[in-house]
Image (tube, rainbow, N blue to C red):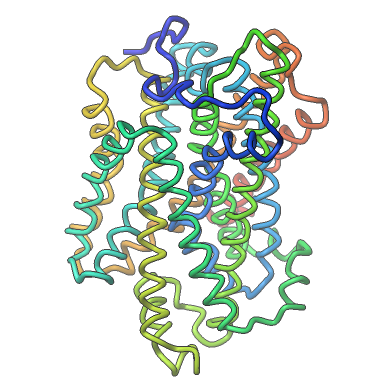
Length: 445
Protein backbone atom coordinates (compact mmCIF):
# COMPACT_ATOMS: atom_id res chain seq x y z
CA UNK A 1 0.00 0.00 0.00
CA UNK A 2 2.80 2.41 0.84
CA UNK A 3 5.25 3.52 -1.80
CA UNK A 4 8.11 5.94 -1.99
CA UNK A 5 7.19 9.33 -3.41
CA UNK A 6 10.57 9.58 -5.12
CA UNK A 7 8.97 9.13 -8.55
CA UNK A 8 5.47 10.19 -7.55
CA UNK A 9 3.44 12.90 -9.21
CA UNK A 10 3.64 16.48 -8.07
CA UNK A 11 1.66 17.58 -5.02
CA UNK A 12 -1.88 18.54 -6.11
CA UNK A 13 -0.70 17.91 -9.65
CA UNK A 14 -3.79 19.40 -11.31
CA UNK A 15 -2.95 22.89 -9.95
CA UNK A 16 0.79 22.60 -9.25
CA UNK A 17 2.63 25.46 -10.99
CA UNK A 18 -0.61 26.57 -12.66
CA UNK A 19 -0.46 30.25 -11.63
CA UNK A 20 1.93 32.55 -13.48
CA UNK A 21 3.68 35.32 -11.54
CA UNK A 22 5.26 38.49 -12.98
CA UNK A 23 9.05 38.61 -13.08
CA UNK A 24 9.78 42.33 -13.27
CA UNK A 25 6.68 43.94 -11.74
CA UNK A 26 6.52 46.26 -8.73
CA UNK A 27 6.15 45.07 -5.14
CA UNK A 28 2.35 45.38 -4.84
CA UNK A 29 1.57 43.79 -8.21
CA UNK A 30 3.89 40.90 -7.38
CA UNK A 31 2.36 40.49 -3.91
CA UNK A 32 -1.11 40.42 -5.50
CA UNK A 33 0.01 37.58 -7.79
CA UNK A 34 1.20 35.59 -4.78
CA UNK A 35 -1.88 36.44 -2.68
CA UNK A 36 -4.31 33.56 -2.27
CA UNK A 37 -2.65 30.51 -0.72
CA UNK A 38 -2.41 32.42 2.56
CA UNK A 39 -6.20 32.76 2.66
CA UNK A 40 -6.65 29.00 2.23
CA UNK A 41 -4.20 28.37 5.06
CA UNK A 42 -5.65 31.09 7.30
CA UNK A 43 -9.22 29.86 7.01
CA UNK A 44 -8.21 26.74 8.92
CA UNK A 45 -7.22 29.02 11.80
CA UNK A 46 -10.74 30.44 12.10
CA UNK A 47 -12.88 27.36 11.53
CA UNK A 48 -15.87 26.48 13.79
CA UNK A 49 -13.51 24.71 16.22
CA UNK A 50 -11.94 28.08 16.97
CA UNK A 51 -15.37 29.52 17.63
CA UNK A 52 -16.17 27.09 20.41
CA UNK A 53 -12.79 27.28 22.12
CA UNK A 54 -12.37 31.05 21.79
CA UNK A 55 -15.93 32.01 22.77
CA UNK A 56 -15.86 29.48 25.64
CA UNK A 57 -12.50 30.88 26.73
CA UNK A 58 -13.90 34.41 26.88
CA UNK A 59 -17.16 33.39 28.54
CA UNK A 60 -15.38 31.37 31.24
CA UNK A 61 -12.11 33.24 31.88
CA UNK A 62 -12.84 36.65 30.36
CA UNK A 63 -9.73 38.02 28.58
CA UNK A 64 -7.07 35.81 30.26
CA UNK A 65 -6.74 33.39 27.34
CA UNK A 66 -6.36 36.07 24.67
CA UNK A 67 -2.60 35.78 25.34
CA UNK A 68 -2.84 32.15 24.19
CA UNK A 69 -4.40 33.29 20.90
CA UNK A 70 -1.51 35.74 20.41
CA UNK A 71 1.17 33.12 21.11
CA UNK A 72 -0.62 30.54 18.94
CA UNK A 73 -0.82 32.98 16.04
CA UNK A 74 2.89 33.80 16.26
CA UNK A 75 3.68 30.07 16.32
CA UNK A 76 1.41 29.58 13.30
CA UNK A 77 3.22 32.30 11.33
CA UNK A 78 6.60 30.70 12.00
CA UNK A 79 5.50 27.16 11.16
CA UNK A 80 3.57 28.13 8.03
CA UNK A 81 6.56 30.09 6.76
CA UNK A 82 8.67 26.95 7.23
CA UNK A 83 6.06 24.80 5.45
CA UNK A 84 5.90 27.19 2.49
CA UNK A 85 9.69 27.29 2.28
CA UNK A 86 9.83 23.49 2.27
CA UNK A 87 7.37 23.18 -0.61
CA UNK A 88 8.90 25.94 -2.73
CA UNK A 89 12.50 24.74 -2.36
CA UNK A 90 12.00 20.97 -2.65
CA UNK A 91 8.98 20.77 -4.95
CA UNK A 92 7.46 18.24 -2.54
CA UNK A 93 4.96 18.60 0.29
CA UNK A 94 5.45 17.60 3.91
CA UNK A 95 3.51 14.32 3.51
CA UNK A 96 5.60 13.21 0.53
CA UNK A 97 8.89 13.97 2.27
CA UNK A 98 7.79 12.34 5.52
CA UNK A 99 6.89 9.11 3.73
CA UNK A 100 10.10 9.21 1.69
CA UNK A 101 12.37 9.65 4.69
CA UNK A 102 10.83 7.34 7.27
CA UNK A 103 10.57 3.58 7.68
CA UNK A 104 7.40 1.80 6.60
CA UNK A 105 6.26 1.36 10.23
CA UNK A 106 6.89 4.98 11.18
CA UNK A 107 5.24 6.11 7.94
CA UNK A 108 2.08 4.13 8.79
CA UNK A 109 2.07 5.49 12.35
CA UNK A 110 2.42 9.11 11.20
CA UNK A 111 -0.21 8.61 8.51
CA UNK A 112 -2.71 7.29 11.09
CA UNK A 113 -2.03 10.22 13.43
CA UNK A 114 -2.43 12.66 10.54
CA UNK A 115 -5.65 11.05 9.32
CA UNK A 116 -7.06 11.24 12.87
CA UNK A 117 -6.09 14.92 12.96
CA UNK A 118 -7.95 15.47 9.67
CA UNK A 119 -10.99 13.76 11.20
CA UNK A 120 -10.73 15.97 14.29
CA UNK A 121 -10.56 19.02 12.03
CA UNK A 122 -13.57 17.87 10.04
CA UNK A 123 -15.61 17.34 13.20
CA UNK A 124 -15.64 21.10 13.75
CA UNK A 125 -16.31 21.94 10.11
CA UNK A 126 -19.06 19.35 9.65
CA UNK A 127 -20.88 20.09 12.90
CA UNK A 128 -20.53 23.85 12.37
CA UNK A 129 -21.91 23.67 8.82
CA UNK A 130 -24.68 21.28 9.85
CA UNK A 131 -25.82 23.52 12.70
CA UNK A 132 -25.65 26.62 10.48
CA UNK A 133 -27.93 24.90 7.92
CA UNK A 134 -30.27 23.95 10.75
CA UNK A 135 -30.39 27.53 12.06
CA UNK A 136 -30.77 29.18 8.65
CA UNK A 137 -33.06 26.73 6.85
CA UNK A 138 -34.52 24.48 9.54
CA UNK A 139 -32.85 21.30 8.29
CA UNK A 140 -32.50 18.55 10.92
CA UNK A 141 -28.89 18.35 12.09
CA UNK A 142 -28.36 14.87 10.61
CA UNK A 143 -29.57 16.14 7.21
CA UNK A 144 -27.25 19.15 7.43
CA UNK A 145 -24.29 16.93 8.29
CA UNK A 146 -25.13 14.59 5.40
CA UNK A 147 -25.27 17.52 2.96
CA UNK A 148 -21.73 18.51 3.96
CA UNK A 149 -20.53 15.05 2.85
CA UNK A 150 -21.27 15.97 -0.75
CA UNK A 151 -19.97 19.53 -0.81
CA UNK A 152 -16.73 17.90 -1.94
CA UNK A 153 -18.37 17.92 -5.37
CA UNK A 154 -18.31 21.73 -5.24
CA UNK A 155 -14.53 21.55 -4.82
CA UNK A 156 -14.23 19.36 -7.91
CA UNK A 157 -16.09 22.00 -9.93
CA UNK A 158 -14.00 24.83 -8.49
CA UNK A 159 -10.74 23.04 -9.31
CA UNK A 160 -11.78 22.88 -12.95
CA UNK A 161 -12.35 26.65 -12.91
CA UNK A 162 -8.77 27.31 -11.77
CA UNK A 163 -7.04 27.65 -8.42
CA UNK A 164 -7.35 31.46 -8.38
CA UNK A 165 -11.15 31.07 -8.31
CA UNK A 166 -10.90 28.90 -5.20
CA UNK A 167 -8.62 31.46 -3.54
CA UNK A 168 -11.04 34.30 -4.36
CA UNK A 169 -14.08 32.43 -3.00
CA UNK A 170 -12.31 31.50 0.24
CA UNK A 171 -11.01 35.07 0.68
CA UNK A 172 -14.59 36.38 0.28
CA UNK A 173 -15.89 33.96 2.92
CA UNK A 174 -13.08 35.06 5.26
CA UNK A 175 -14.09 38.70 4.74
CA UNK A 176 -17.70 37.84 5.66
CA UNK A 177 -16.55 36.21 8.93
CA UNK A 178 -14.29 39.17 9.80
CA UNK A 179 -16.89 41.87 9.23
CA UNK A 180 -19.71 40.00 11.00
CA UNK A 181 -17.71 39.62 14.21
CA UNK A 182 -16.17 43.07 14.03
CA UNK A 183 -19.70 44.52 13.83
CA UNK A 184 -20.96 42.38 16.72
CA UNK A 185 -17.98 43.20 18.95
CA UNK A 186 -18.40 46.93 18.31
CA UNK A 187 -22.03 46.62 19.42
CA UNK A 188 -20.99 44.65 22.53
CA UNK A 189 -18.75 47.55 23.72
CA UNK A 190 -16.02 45.49 25.47
CA UNK A 191 -13.63 46.88 28.08
CA UNK A 192 -10.64 47.82 25.91
CA UNK A 193 -8.03 48.28 28.73
CA UNK A 194 -8.91 44.81 30.07
CA UNK A 195 -8.46 43.35 26.58
CA UNK A 196 -4.91 44.72 26.34
CA UNK A 197 -4.07 43.41 29.82
CA UNK A 198 -5.21 39.97 28.64
CA UNK A 199 -2.36 39.86 26.11
CA UNK A 200 0.09 39.43 29.01
CA UNK A 201 0.43 35.65 29.70
CA UNK A 202 -0.71 34.43 33.14
CA UNK A 203 0.80 31.55 35.16
CA UNK A 204 -2.77 30.60 36.13
CA UNK A 205 -3.19 29.06 32.69
CA UNK A 206 -0.73 26.25 33.49
CA UNK A 207 -1.71 25.74 37.15
CA UNK A 208 -5.47 25.49 36.47
CA UNK A 209 -6.26 22.17 34.69
CA UNK A 210 -9.60 23.41 33.30
CA UNK A 211 -7.97 26.55 31.95
CA UNK A 212 -5.05 24.54 30.56
CA UNK A 213 -7.48 22.17 28.81
CA UNK A 214 -9.21 25.11 27.14
CA UNK A 215 -5.88 26.81 26.37
CA UNK A 216 -4.63 23.67 24.62
CA UNK A 217 -7.94 23.58 22.78
CA UNK A 218 -7.23 27.11 21.52
CA UNK A 219 -3.70 26.07 20.48
CA UNK A 220 -5.08 23.00 18.71
CA UNK A 221 -7.79 25.06 17.00
CA UNK A 222 -5.30 27.74 15.96
CA UNK A 223 -2.21 25.74 14.96
CA UNK A 224 -3.60 22.70 13.19
CA UNK A 225 -1.39 19.89 11.83
CA UNK A 226 -3.17 19.57 8.49
CA UNK A 227 -2.43 23.21 7.68
CA UNK A 228 1.32 22.47 7.62
CA UNK A 229 0.73 19.81 4.96
CA UNK A 230 -1.60 22.14 3.08
CA UNK A 231 0.83 25.08 3.21
CA UNK A 232 3.73 22.99 1.92
CA UNK A 233 1.60 21.98 -1.07
CA UNK A 234 -0.31 25.07 -2.18
CA UNK A 235 2.86 27.18 -1.97
CA UNK A 236 3.74 25.27 -5.16
CA UNK A 237 0.71 26.51 -7.12
CA UNK A 238 2.83 29.42 -8.39
CA UNK A 239 5.18 28.71 -11.29
CA UNK A 240 8.68 28.52 -9.80
CA UNK A 241 12.09 28.21 -11.48
CA UNK A 242 13.91 26.06 -8.90
CA UNK A 243 17.17 26.35 -10.82
CA UNK A 244 17.25 30.07 -10.09
CA UNK A 245 18.01 30.84 -6.43
CA UNK A 246 16.94 34.48 -6.84
CA UNK A 247 13.53 33.39 -8.12
CA UNK A 248 13.16 30.83 -5.32
CA UNK A 249 14.07 33.48 -2.72
CA UNK A 250 11.55 35.88 -4.23
CA UNK A 251 8.83 33.22 -4.19
CA UNK A 252 9.54 32.44 -0.55
CA UNK A 253 9.50 36.13 0.41
CA UNK A 254 6.13 36.90 -1.21
CA UNK A 255 4.49 33.61 -0.21
CA UNK A 256 5.46 34.20 3.43
CA UNK A 257 4.24 37.82 3.23
CA UNK A 258 0.86 36.60 1.94
CA UNK A 259 0.73 33.96 4.69
CA UNK A 260 1.53 36.45 7.48
CA UNK A 261 -1.04 38.98 6.25
CA UNK A 262 -3.80 36.36 6.12
CA UNK A 263 -2.81 34.83 9.48
CA UNK A 264 -3.01 38.30 11.00
CA UNK A 265 -6.63 38.43 9.80
CA UNK A 266 -7.22 35.02 11.42
CA UNK A 267 -5.63 36.33 14.65
CA UNK A 268 -8.01 39.31 14.65
CA UNK A 269 -11.03 37.05 14.06
CA UNK A 270 -10.06 34.74 16.94
CA UNK A 271 -9.55 37.72 19.24
CA UNK A 272 -12.97 39.05 18.24
CA UNK A 273 -14.54 35.68 19.07
CA UNK A 274 -12.99 35.60 22.54
CA UNK A 275 -13.83 39.27 23.15
CA UNK A 276 -17.45 38.64 22.12
CA UNK A 277 -17.68 35.69 24.52
CA UNK A 278 -16.20 37.74 27.36
CA UNK A 279 -18.21 40.92 26.72
CA UNK A 280 -21.58 39.20 26.41
CA UNK A 281 -21.42 36.11 28.60
CA UNK A 282 -18.66 36.35 31.25
CA UNK A 283 -20.03 36.26 34.79
CA UNK A 284 -23.63 35.79 33.70
CA UNK A 285 -24.00 33.06 31.08
CA UNK A 286 -20.55 31.48 30.88
CA UNK A 287 -22.24 28.16 30.10
CA UNK A 288 -23.34 29.42 26.67
CA UNK A 289 -20.72 27.48 24.76
CA UNK A 290 -22.93 25.93 22.10
CA UNK A 291 -23.64 27.34 18.65
CA UNK A 292 -27.41 27.06 19.11
CA UNK A 293 -27.23 28.81 22.50
CA UNK A 294 -25.12 31.62 21.06
CA UNK A 295 -27.47 32.00 18.11
CA UNK A 296 -30.52 32.40 20.37
CA UNK A 297 -28.64 34.52 22.93
CA UNK A 298 -27.81 37.19 20.35
CA UNK A 299 -31.52 37.88 19.88
CA UNK A 300 -32.41 37.68 23.61
CA UNK A 301 -32.39 41.07 25.36
CA UNK A 302 -32.32 39.36 28.79
CA UNK A 303 -28.87 37.98 27.96
CA UNK A 304 -27.12 40.53 25.75
CA UNK A 305 -29.16 43.61 26.57
CA UNK A 306 -30.16 46.35 24.18
CA UNK A 307 -28.04 45.11 21.28
CA UNK A 308 -30.14 41.93 20.98
CA UNK A 309 -31.54 41.49 17.50
CA UNK A 310 -32.65 38.68 15.16
CA UNK A 311 -30.29 40.27 12.62
CA UNK A 312 -27.29 39.54 14.89
CA UNK A 313 -28.40 35.92 15.19
CA UNK A 314 -28.80 35.63 11.43
CA UNK A 315 -25.36 37.19 10.82
CA UNK A 316 -23.87 34.72 13.32
CA UNK A 317 -25.38 31.77 11.41
CA UNK A 318 -24.22 33.15 8.05
CA UNK A 319 -20.68 33.58 9.39
CA UNK A 320 -20.81 30.04 10.82
CA UNK A 321 -21.82 28.62 7.44
CA UNK A 322 -19.09 30.67 5.71
CA UNK A 323 -16.54 29.34 8.17
CA UNK A 324 -17.65 25.73 7.82
CA UNK A 325 -17.75 25.79 4.03
CA UNK A 326 -14.43 27.55 3.54
CA UNK A 327 -12.80 25.18 6.01
CA UNK A 328 -14.35 22.24 4.17
CA UNK A 329 -12.60 23.26 0.95
CA UNK A 330 -9.18 23.43 2.60
CA UNK A 331 -9.82 20.35 4.73
CA UNK A 332 -10.64 18.26 1.66
CA UNK A 333 -7.53 19.52 -0.14
CA UNK A 334 -5.45 18.61 2.93
CA UNK A 335 -6.97 15.13 2.99
CA UNK A 336 -6.00 14.64 -0.65
CA UNK A 337 -2.43 15.86 0.01
CA UNK A 338 -2.03 13.51 2.98
CA UNK A 339 -3.45 10.45 1.20
CA UNK A 340 -1.39 11.08 -1.93
CA UNK A 341 1.74 11.71 0.12
CA UNK A 342 1.52 8.76 2.50
CA UNK A 343 -0.38 6.25 0.32
CA UNK A 344 0.06 5.65 -3.38
CA UNK A 345 -3.58 5.61 -4.49
CA UNK A 346 -4.39 4.95 -8.12
CA UNK A 347 -7.97 6.16 -8.43
CA UNK A 348 -9.81 9.11 -10.01
CA UNK A 349 -9.56 12.40 -8.13
CA UNK A 350 -13.32 12.62 -7.56
CA UNK A 351 -13.29 9.15 -5.95
CA UNK A 352 -10.21 9.99 -3.89
CA UNK A 353 -11.75 13.20 -2.56
CA UNK A 354 -15.05 11.48 -1.81
CA UNK A 355 -13.20 8.70 0.04
CA UNK A 356 -11.26 11.28 2.06
CA UNK A 357 -14.50 13.05 2.95
CA UNK A 358 -16.34 9.86 3.90
CA UNK A 359 -13.48 8.77 6.16
CA UNK A 360 -13.88 12.02 8.06
CA UNK A 361 -17.64 12.33 8.11
CA UNK A 362 -18.62 8.76 9.05
CA UNK A 363 -17.64 8.98 12.78
CA UNK A 364 -19.39 12.36 13.14
CA UNK A 365 -22.54 11.12 11.41
CA UNK A 366 -22.56 8.02 13.63
CA UNK A 367 -22.21 10.18 16.73
CA UNK A 368 -24.99 12.50 15.51
CA UNK A 369 -27.34 9.58 14.91
CA UNK A 370 -26.56 8.06 18.31
CA UNK A 371 -27.14 11.37 20.12
CA UNK A 372 -29.98 12.49 17.83
CA UNK A 373 -31.76 15.47 19.42
CA UNK A 374 -28.99 16.05 21.97
CA UNK A 375 -26.91 18.76 20.30
CA UNK A 376 -24.99 19.60 23.47
CA UNK A 377 -23.45 16.12 23.40
CA UNK A 378 -22.58 16.50 19.73
CA UNK A 379 -20.99 19.91 20.27
CA UNK A 380 -18.94 18.53 23.19
CA UNK A 381 -16.98 16.70 20.50
CA UNK A 382 -15.65 20.04 19.32
CA UNK A 383 -13.48 21.03 22.26
CA UNK A 384 -12.12 17.49 22.59
CA UNK A 385 -11.30 17.43 18.88
CA UNK A 386 -9.34 20.67 19.19
CA UNK A 387 -7.36 19.31 22.15
CA UNK A 388 -6.53 16.20 20.11
CA UNK A 389 -5.21 18.47 17.34
CA UNK A 390 -2.86 20.02 19.87
CA UNK A 391 -1.67 16.54 20.86
CA UNK A 392 -1.17 15.58 17.18
CA UNK A 393 0.65 18.81 16.31
CA UNK A 394 4.19 17.74 17.38
CA UNK A 395 3.97 14.78 14.97
CA UNK A 396 3.80 17.31 12.12
CA UNK A 397 6.17 19.89 13.62
CA UNK A 398 9.06 17.49 14.25
CA UNK A 399 9.37 16.28 10.61
CA UNK A 400 8.90 19.88 9.39
CA UNK A 401 11.77 21.16 11.56
CA UNK A 402 14.00 18.21 10.63
CA UNK A 403 13.46 18.68 6.90
CA UNK A 404 13.77 22.48 6.82
CA UNK A 405 16.95 22.26 8.95
CA UNK A 406 18.53 19.73 6.55
CA UNK A 407 21.28 21.48 4.57
CA UNK A 408 21.37 18.72 1.92
CA UNK A 409 17.65 19.01 1.30
CA UNK A 410 17.24 22.79 1.56
CA UNK A 411 20.62 24.06 0.32
CA UNK A 412 20.96 27.82 0.74
CA UNK A 413 17.41 28.00 2.11
CA UNK A 414 18.01 25.89 5.20
CA UNK A 415 16.56 27.25 8.46
CA UNK A 416 18.44 30.00 10.25
CA UNK A 417 19.62 28.87 13.69
CA UNK A 418 17.02 31.02 15.52
CA UNK A 419 14.19 29.51 13.45
CA UNK A 420 15.36 25.95 14.06
CA UNK A 421 15.79 26.35 17.82
CA UNK A 422 12.56 28.32 18.25
CA UNK A 423 10.64 25.59 16.42
CA UNK A 424 12.24 22.89 18.59
CA UNK A 425 11.33 24.83 21.74
CA UNK A 426 7.72 25.11 20.52
CA UNK A 427 7.52 21.36 19.87
CA UNK A 428 9.04 20.49 23.26
CA UNK A 429 6.75 22.88 25.17
CA UNK A 430 3.67 21.48 23.43
CA UNK A 431 4.71 17.91 24.24
CA UNK A 432 5.32 18.81 27.91
CA UNK A 433 2.01 20.69 28.23
CA UNK A 434 0.05 17.85 26.68
CA UNK A 435 1.76 15.29 28.92
CA UNK A 436 0.99 17.47 31.94
CA UNK A 437 -2.65 17.79 30.87
CA UNK A 438 -2.99 14.01 30.60
CA UNK A 439 -1.49 13.56 34.08
CA UNK A 440 -3.87 16.18 35.53
CA UNK A 441 -6.85 14.58 33.82
CA UNK A 442 -5.92 11.20 35.32
CA UNK A 443 -5.48 12.82 38.74
CA UNK A 444 -1.78 11.91 38.92
CA UNK A 445 -0.41 15.48 38.87
